[in-house]
Each structure stands twice: as structure tokens, then as C-alpha cells.
Image (cartoon, rainbow, N blue to C red; front, side):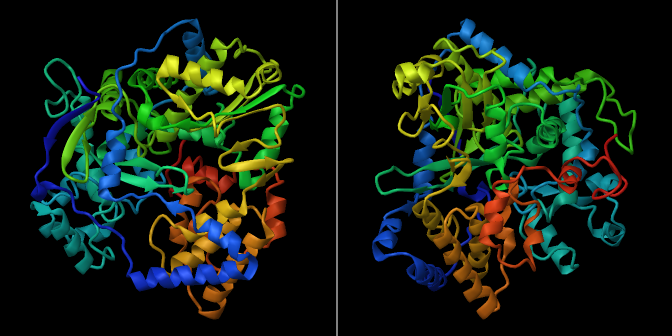
Length: 599
């Protein structure tokens, strides 16, 4: 039996709508000309030629499909010895929240800071799907909806309903995204959540096995690679909003714990452009100077991630929760489910669906993973990768004789990025061969592929790379070639408005480490914004929000181009999470979410 189980081919007339953002060639070519003009101001022809040898990875439908099919691997049972069991328990302890967590009641999910531009995904982007807009009317507080009640009680197709709303001036376009269908999604999914809780046959087989809802639509993210590297694509799932909402009844709590507090061992709160390297250095040297420092780089981390680990991570998550009540809020201080068993059902359905929801490829083929594979796009993606990475690294180090329970052992992780330090002199003994031994252990335990070439084992912190930034004597550093190739090869087509925003965003992300790159970005900004009066489209910088580099992309409107020395000084600061950031994620007083807040 293969890992990739073929289920069926979805007919073309049932396939989701596709909205590919594509600008005219003359627009993208003119954008390139502007970037080249800017680079010519500060770089030699040889340096520019070297930048142009890089490329953005091919993410055509065929490339995405071939990349997905590479998740086919033989079943690999984990040797669950003392090293592995110790790593699992130590991971649970390292990330243990300082308080008991309670699930979020479904109606309270409306107050989560959702990312609204993405698609509403299946079934809302299917021609065959119909719904009654006012099915969840009791959740709607906007009085304007009283005007549409007469027409909103019949069955509608998604695009017909969206065009009706657009004619009323309620939305700007008819795109089936989360923003345009916000109320409809919450109203419709509320009934489905109750069906899951009460064991409906739509979501449960007769023997109690969860039934996933529709499918995950396969999208992709492409990376910039050098001429001697293969294309690098990351699968991104367009998960159903039902699954994301059920997920967030639990994951919101974990995000709050690790973002707003210092619980756990994530790299969150140590954003490099805000002084993260300084904070990390202080933590690492708290008990003296360690003798070995590691930065582990994995190849195909998500593609090879074993379901056995995912199940264990979910069990760790579950151990942090009490399902006898909901998280208390200003609206429901004593909110309780009718039975903890109902919340347990939601949990079981969610954790099963994370692994076994079918995956829809661009050509209509529908597959289901059987024992390995994980995709980005879930609410828990970064947390799952973080916990799994912790288990894998700790297991491998323990098998090499490292005391992972020592008070002097230190580790921070974010997704598949990691930074580890300890006092054992294994680097002095083995040197770079330490990475070869770790790679062998990773293969033995998890069928994982540790990238020996890109991983690092050093005696000091200077020279170590994490989250894409090299530590250069305490300050973050990136090469000019790396910075310029991300400027020249954007992931999506750019017009002038997006290029202007990108120039500011990349200058900020560079932390002022390169005077020439900063001047290149500033020249583009001055040419477009000052001379041509272009209004930057800062919504193109959502990636900086997701990385906690900035609070809100909209806050950059009206802000002058940043000073390089100020950026450099900020990179030597002490990163702190602002009160407004904390309140936006988890309101504890009246404010961004109105009268709603958590107690």
C-alpha cells in the first residue's frame, strides 16, 4: 500500500474556480527595468550578473504536482526507545504552558484576527454549492442585513450571492474570499460544528471514525534558489474554513500562550530585525559559554513528517487542555459545553482531518496521505512543525550522548528552524562530523533528511544562521546577493505599487546590514513614490505581519522611508511585544473587539 492513496479524479465542471494573479508582460518587464536601474547605481556589472544567475523556483501546475508526488515514501516505524521517549516527555515539559488551557467557544472565533484575503476554499468556490445566507442569522449583528432578508432566505450559488451583495455596495468585488463571506461562513459552519459535536453521520462512520470535510486544495509557495540548486517549492493547503475554525477553538489558546507570554521554547518574541540575536545571545550565555552550538537545516521536512509524530504532538497539545469549560469571556464568564465528550469529538475530528483530509491537485486528482506528509496552511502549521522538530532534534542528540535534561541545555525552535547550545564538547571531538552523525540518527529514527551542507555546528554564536539571518558578532547579516535576488525575483507579479511597498519592506527586513542594498531600495522608493507619486500597496507586505516583523501593514501608510542607522540600532534592541499586538491577538479589556474580551 502506498503513502499516496489515489481516491478519484474530480471532474472539470466540479473543480474549484481559479483566480491567478497575472500582470501584463510589459508591466513586469518595466518593473525589472526599474530594479536594474537601481542596482546599476550601487553595484558592479559582475555583481548584478551574479544576482541574475539565481531564479524563482518553477511553480507551474506540473511542477507543483511533481513536487507533491515526491511525498511518496515507504512506511517507517519509529524505534521508540528510551531516547525517543525521553525526547517526547522533554518536549512536553519545555512547552508546558504556565496555566491550564480551555477551548474557545465557536461564537467567540469571530473575534480572532483572521487573515481575510485568502479564498473561502471548498465548498464555497464550487459551482455546484448552494446555501441559504441567513441560515446563521442569530450570529449577525449588522443591522444592514435586515434590508436583504426577503432575498436571503432562498438557496443561492456563491457567485450569485456575492454579486448581489456587490450591487448593494456591501462588498467591493465578487471574489469568494473569507472577507466577502465572513458572516455566511460563520453562520453556515456553526451548524456543521454542532453536527460534529453530536456525532452526525455526515462526519462520523458507524464505527466512530471521523469523516473529513471536502478536501484541501493544493497551492504552493516557491523559493528563490541559486543556479546549482534544484527548485524548492512548499505545499500550501487551501483548507476548508470549517477545519480552520474547529482548529482555532484550540490553537488560538496555544498561539496566545507562546506569543503573548514567554512560555515554551519557540523563537517567537525573538524577531531578528527587532534585536532577536541580542536576546538569544543573552539567553544562551546565561550559564556561561557553551561548547557546542547547532543550527539544524532539514530537507523536505513537511514532506517526510511522520503521522506517528503528528499523533504524539496532538497528544501533547491535548495534555495542556481541560475540556470541562470554555475560555471565560466578558460575554460568557461561566461558559460550559453540554458535555466534555462533545469537545472531545471536535478534537478527535480535527486531529484526524489534519492527517487524512484528501488533497486536490491542480489536474483534478484526489489523493490521501497514509503515513507521512504535512502541509502549510493550517492554523497549527508552525506549532506542529515546532513540536515535531523538537522531538526529532532531542531524540537524535540524546542518542549521541547529549544530556537533553540538563539545566544548561538550551534550545529554541520555530517551525523547521532551530538553535541549540549545550556544554558537552562534542564539537571539539567530532568537528563537522557531528552533523554526519546527527543525519544518520535522523534517518534511523524518523526517515528524515538532515541537510549536512546547510546545517551548522560551531563553537561560538558568531557565524550561526537562524531564521535566514547570520549572526555577525551579535548583529544580523544577509549577503547582498541574497537581498538583491529577493528584490529582483518576487514570488508574485509586481506592478509599481507593489514594487514600492517591497522596496520598503525588504529594506526593513535587511536591518540596515548593507549600505548599498539600502540605497538601492531607497532609490526605487524615491523614484516611484516621490517622483512618480505612486501609492505603495502595503497589503503586499502581509508576510511581514505573519513573521511579526511589523504589527499592521496599513501602519506604513504615510511613513517616510526608514533610516538605515535606525534600522541597525533596532536590530540591537530588546524585542518586546507591544500592548496593542497582545490585545489584537487576545483582548483582555474592551478595545479592538468592542465589548468582547477574555477574562
